[in-house]
Image (cartoon, rainbow, N blue to C red; front, side, top):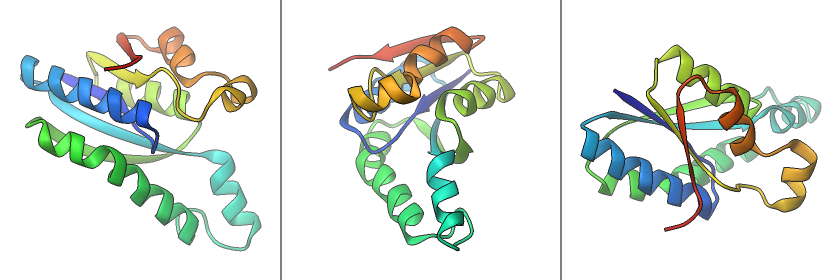
Length: 141
């Protein structure tokens, strides 16, 4: 079985990673930690004249994600694969989970805050409604 956990640099993401790691160990499942660089961030890099994926901001953002969730993932004892994608987070998570035939997707209840959720739509809400497998929304420890 494969468990996919969506990660970013938020504390809610670290909570989701911790729960997903525990479940992966308990179920003897593989854990795929997936960070999706949101399309508008990639577009900003291109507009600034830097190819997407090569800007210092993107590299720093990616490093920040793994700084936040990496220790949790590494300490849990699960078999972890780190995956980086670009796109819209909910859509990319659902597509990735489908591609690897995941049995479960784990997401945090909020990543970027209330205003971003209102403007962009809640990633967790969209994943719950679009995923073809079970979804766990981690709300807290």
